[in-house]
Amino acid sequence: MSNGARAGRHARERGIFTFVEILLATLVLALAATATAYWVESVNELTTGADEAVVGDALVKTMEEILAPLPFREPGGTTFGPEPGETLATYDDLDDFYRSTYSPPLNKDRGVQADYGTWTITVSVTEVDPTTLLPAVDTDMVRVKVTATRKDRVITEGYWLRARAALE
Ligand SMILES: [Ca+2]
Image (cartoon, rainbow, N blue to C red):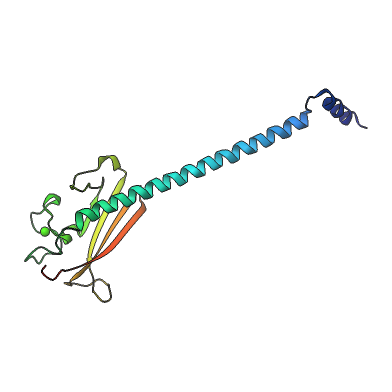
């Protein structure tokens, strides 16, 4: 029996650990701590992603609340986009918003949601052919797209079609 093995056996008999045992235990603890840190970081990333998805959905829905009640087109108007002199506060038909970007995003009263300054809402309203849904000119259908981005990453996109009603 070697002197090392004899010393290890004597150490166990005395109830203390050898240097190798302490080294192995330290290594296992270090690996466990690293795995735990990695797991916590992964959970934090998932939570942040879930939070962003919830906020992105809410911001897109807020724009839907602004856009949905608007008439398809300015009564008697021929302009696609805001009529001369109109501003955000006086936009009164859907295509007034046809190429809009808001950062911070709007609240349902068209005010600014300053708490979401890192977010951008982009609205596009495109005339489309009602049959093919391809871009077209002077049709009775538009495709509305609302995109919520944060730090140049698209978080949520919402699309819908809007047809001109019989009396619009
Ligand atoms: Ca208008």
